[in-house]
Every structure is written in structure tokens, then in C-alpha cells.
Amino acid sequence: MLALITRRLMTAIPTLLVIILASFFLMRLAPGGPFDGERPLDPATQAALQQAYGLDRPLWEQAWLYISRLVQGDFGPSLVYRDFTVSELIAQGLPISLTLGGLAIVLALMIGVTAGLFAAVRAGQAADKTIMMLATVATALPTFVTGPALALFFGLWLGLLPVSGTGQGGAWLIMPVVALALPVSGAIAKLTRAGLASVLKQDHIRTARARGLPEVKILFKHGLRPALVPVASYLGPAAAGLLTGAVVVETVFGLPGLGRYFVQGALNRDYPLVLGVVTLYAALIILFNLFADLIYGWLDPRMREG
Amino acid sequence: MLKRHLPLALVLLIAALALLLPFFLPWSYDQIDWDAVRAPAFSEPHIFGTDDIGRDRLARLAAGTRITLLVAMAAALVSLVVGIAWGATAGWIGGKVDELMMRIVDGLYALPFMFIVILLMVVFGRSILLVFVGIGLVEWLTMARVVRGQVMALKQRPFILAAEAAGTPSTTIVLRHILPNIAGVALAYLMLTVPQVVMVESFLSFLGLGVQEPLTSLGILVKEGADDMDMAPLGLLLPGGLLVLILVCLTIEGERLRDRFS
Image (cartoon, rainbow over all chains, first blue to last red; front, side):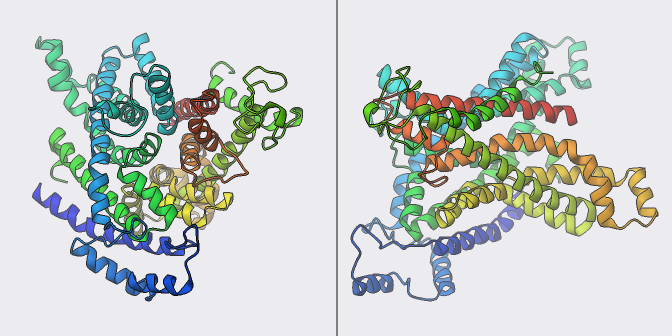
């Protein structure tokens, strides 16, 4: 287990480096710069700003400087939100994005595993087919459609939930989390059903049945655990999907999370902000994949060695 | 036949309508009807009414669907070509090369790819061509994995071994004997890639990073509708509903095809 963790962290460093460098140079290829506001600045101010932030130096030197500061935990200053460092912006946005993503994955697991379990027990029957059809529809629901649609129904028409911003207890979280969780829950339901249906046909289940164990125990103790292996391996891609979905949800519901900073930063050419968010997201996804692998090993002991 | 492939038939019908409607409508999708700004639905002559600056909703839906489906097909083709080339090469050569190529695919899978695409769109955003090349370049990974698996399995089959023994050059074997045999599976995954690509394109357009005005796509229409939904909910519900319908139909059809081939 420790070996797995160290091995993964060793490959994580070059991966992160590649992502940072790719984003760095891509960003600089884009036309325009961070100081092209509504009113053009006079050339002297422009040059002074460029110099102050080191943007006049050769690109590779800037890249090197960026990375050597990053290693010390310094994400640099934001070029557009002038009085903030990128670290401060991230500290503001990250808790919101993490809350959204974390709650969404928990909700998706709850809905998905329950629905999948139910469908697998009734495999081949009408309930199974209905649930699987609903799961397919759920996977095809883009957050940027469900988000505004939910806001329209529950916010504007029924007036039950706040349409934008944070505050008012936890009610502001409900619609963004549901919009995020729906497509993931559909995918989890399908994986759970497929996994459980095949596990239930195996010998150890037949043995358990023959020994007269109660059906509930067979299902939860002997059936569900191996059946959840494909679900665990889906958690990594799901996390990546949730982070991208969060960009839309934060925009739709006006939440000051990381995703909004990322899109704004990309449009404003706020180089350090975009790089900081990409780096953080990449690190989060790598971390989550590792976490998913550990769950994987716990669910299926055969995987622990490899 | 029609009953079994109802979802696909529905998508084809939508595509045909999107293509043909503009010839029968008196309005183009970006034409402003000054006499009927914010016309409600079912008011003559605008069946679905007009939007906040007086453009016919039906004409805009048709134009948006057209662009969305066009981008989707083009991007799916890019992903098909790249995926097959990558997967077939890795699977055919095997050994160290295969391991390296598949490691790269695994690595790319774990990336926050959407963010790189967003950056790409910021860099090259003004061109619709680059929108779909960019999307296609992201969506080829699954195709590469599947194709590689198929090629690995085929490589052991007697007819391939016989062709090799007969001295047929590798490129000929791959092109003439391997590729035709993986066409079915590739087609199934192509069907599954199309809704993915539709989703990515609309996502980018929704954020204002994909298709640019004056062109329109379903993603842009959803965005416009969401911005104006307190005044005209139809503006959100029509393109949103159509987009979901297309996505659901394509997904069902794709999954069915995949289950048949695996």
C-alpha cells in the first residue's frame, strides 16, 4: 500500500510539470494580455506593469521563475484582481468548489448505488428496465441545462430555493449539487447494476444461498462489495467531470468558486490565476485517482499486489 | 427495424428538419422582426415566438441544431481517425511501444482535460474549425483503448498469422485485414462519442468559448435562454429540451450498438 502511494506520487510530479508547462505556454500563445482594459493604458504604464510582473523577460525564464516559486508554495499575484494574490483567491474559491463537488459525489453515490442495487435484484423485470432507462437519461443531462431549468422551476416559479449566490443556510447548495450529481448518479447506477448482476450469478453467492443465509446479508455482505469495484474505478473520471461541471454550475448560480475564477481568468488573460487553478485541479484529480485506487484495493484484495 | 431504432430515427428526423426548415421559413436565424420583438409562442407568423431582440425562435433552433450536429460529426470523425491510428499502431506493434503509448493514454485520461480545452478555445477561439479539432483531440482516448484491445485479439487469429507468413507487408495487413474487422466496434464507439462531443461543444458555447456569434449553436441558445428565463422561459426550455433529447437518443443508440459488439 505504501509502495503504491509512493509510486503514484513519483509519477504525479512529472505529470503535474507537463500540465503546468503546457498551460503556461498555451496561455502565452493567446492574443491579448492582462492589461488590455476598456481604456488602453499609455505605453509607458503598460511597459512598467509588464516589467513589474516580469512579463518582459524571455518566456522560458518566466516559466522557470514560476515553477521555482510554485515549489515554495507561492502562486504569485493575480494580474487582474490587483490587490489579491492567487493563493488568496484560491483560498476563497476552493472551499465552495470542494463543498459542491464533495456533496455531489456523495449524493450521486447514494442515488446511483441504491438504484443500481434495486435494478440488479429485479434483473430483467420491468423495474430494472425502467431504472436503467432513467439512468441513461440522467447520464445525458448536461449541467448547463439542468442547472438553469432547476433554477427556473424551483427558484423563479415555485420560489422555494434561492436562484443565485450563497447564504440562507444550506439551501443555496441544493440545486447546484443536484444538477452536478444527476449525470454521475446515472453512470454509477449502470455500473452498480452491471457489477452486481454478474456477481449474483457467481458460485460464492450460490453457495451462500444454499447455506440458507438471509438474502439481505448475501446482497450487502457478499454481493455488493465485489460489485462496487467498477464503481470505484469510475470515481477518478467522475471527479474530473464534477470539477468541470462545477465551472458551469458556479457560473449559472453565481457562486464565487474556483471554476468561475478559472473562466474569468482565462478570458482576462490573468496568467498566474489560470495556472494556479489548473495546477490545483490537476493535483486534486491525481490525488482523487490515488484515493480511488486505494478504495479499489480495499474492495478487491486481489488488486493490492499488482 | 424502425421501432428498434426509434432513437436514431428521431435524431435523423431532427437533423433533416434542421437542414430543411430554413428553406421554408420566411425568416433567417439572425434576422430581426422589429414588429414582433418578444412575440409569445403560437403567434402568427412565429410558431415559437421571438427572442428578446425579435429573432424567430424556430429559425434559431434550426440553425443552432445544424451547427451543433455539424461540429459533433466533424469532431467525432477527428476522434475516430486519431483513436484508430493510435490504438491500431499500439496494438499491432505491441511490446515496449504499446506499453508507452497506452501509458500516455492512461496519463491523459487522468488530466483535467476540459481545462486544457478551455485554454485552447481561449487561444484559438475565433475559428469553428479549431473548435471541433480541439474537441476531437480530446475525445479519442476511449476509441484508442478499444481499438488497441481489438487489434491485440485479432493479431492472434489464424488468418492474420497466415497473411504474415505469406509475407504480406504490415501496412497492408493492418489496412486490409485488421481495420475492416474492427469497423463494427469502432462504429459503436463512434456513436457513443457523438453525444460526448455534443456535450463538450455546448458546454464551451455555453461559457462563451465555443461557437461565436453571429453563428449559433444549441449551447449558445441555452445560454441566451438562461439569461432571459425570467421573461421568457420558452427560450431556455426549447433549446435545452432539444439538446437533452438529442443526447438521450444518441446515447441509447450508442449503448445498444456497443452491447451488440461486445
